[in-house]
Length: 257
Image 1 (cartoon, one colour):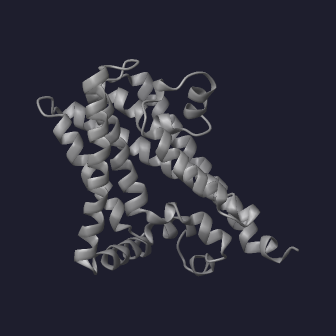
Image 2: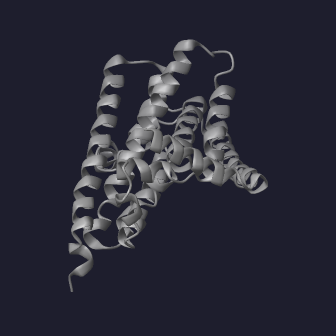
Image 3: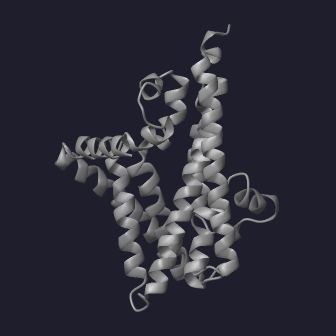
């Protein structure tokens, strides 16, 4: 644990070494997030509620999604890069250290631009919750962020692990973009097979919509389901990476053909 803590401190120090650049990148992401919020505010101002979702519900969903995105892609920035590192054979250094390779890689790098997401998500939740800023609401928001972060990280690690077997990061990149795209919309705007996919194969429903529902109206059964899904994707991500790492360490992928 001391080694991982030292690695994380080093990652923060590296990201913070250029303070002007750090804040410039974070501010750029905040501006992007504000534009997205502006779109939804204008949209609901014209059409009202859509399939049970109103302006406040979607803004809470975006607050949870951006906070979780900031945690996963900002504080644990290598979550997105695992597939590339595996495909390019750049994991050797991690394997030589006396720390768990996956944990080390996740805390090794901080991405300043996505810290803007983290800051924005917290501020957006505070703004939306004005007049209803209870302990229970904050606790549910925190639970939702933990669930969303775990599901997002587990999903990205699982899909990135495909790179161990195919030698390319196409699946990981496609999964990253699809996750952020679909998670930005209320899951109920989709129907049929598409909706089923967003609860299972590409679990974006648990990255924003389901946690937002819990904030609006806490349901212990739904909360247990969400936590269960988060645990399942955490285990799936760890298992996929571990299995892929064995193949990487054996050299089988890099010596064939």
